[in-house]
Image (cartoon, rainbow, N blue to C red; front, side, top):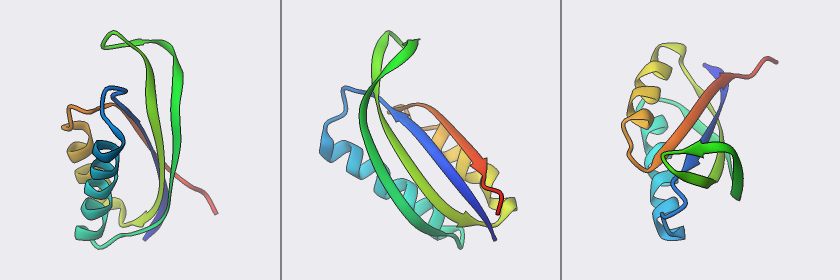
Length: 95
């Protein structure tokens, strides 16, 4: 398993409970693929450099996790399919 970080920008119209549900769904997706979530940080609402889908801000969430490289694409597909996640980025963390 390798170390990864996922940064997701969530639609600012989603309330705190909805953001928590999205975080739980991502955590369950990682766990169901045999991975482990090490840390999740909510950075809160931040201004975007440019509008995305007419939004000028988004809720940022950072998730650090361990997962097999073959499962990362599946995770990205699932995260990308969510309408509430405006953008996301998964990067491998070097030791």
